[in-house]
Amino acid sequence: MEYNDIYDAQGNLTGRTHRRGKPWKPGEYGLVVCVWVYDGQGKLLLTRRAPGKSFAGTWENSGGAAKAGETSRQAIARELFEETGIRAEETEFELLGSDRDAHTLYDFYCLHRQTPVEEIVLLPGETDGVQWVDFDTIHQMIREKQICRIIANQFLRQESMLKLKQNAQE
Image 1 (cartoon, rainbow, N blue to C red):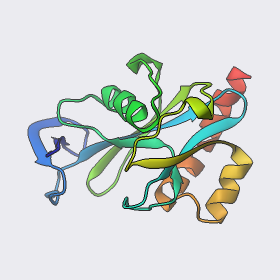
Image 2 (cartoon, rainbow, N blue to C red):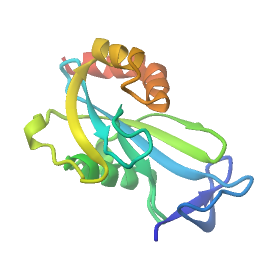
Image 3 (tube, rainbow, N blue to C red):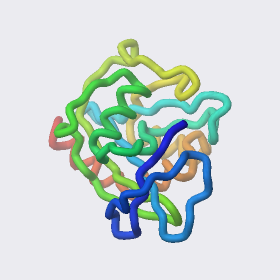
């Protein structure tokens, strides 16, 4: 059974926990973290959601819910490793921004890594495909609905910042 910390609307810990799968009460928020891994050569890493998951078969960046007791950076380091086998220190993740919806607080990160596809270790039941793609390909995948709407909207909001990061590495 997985538990998540409960935050208030301002992102403050309440000291209470929430059992995953139960409905959230008004004013309660959980933390979700996401990371865009970029190679410094114009490409971003995408993984494909495995069958049985929501949005199965669509492509996304790595991420997931923070577990109770985890900081945002601890959660993103764990999620990236679980989904891809890529290890990174918490301090290596650069915060792109934060957002909020009905019951979720989001922290969006980026990370510079040049990891060959053949070295990426996918988590069975979570991810079943991986690829490095350029920005034009991501736009094409969005038009073809190969990237789920939530991730597509996130990418479009953060694209200019990601391009700046890429250009700084080239």
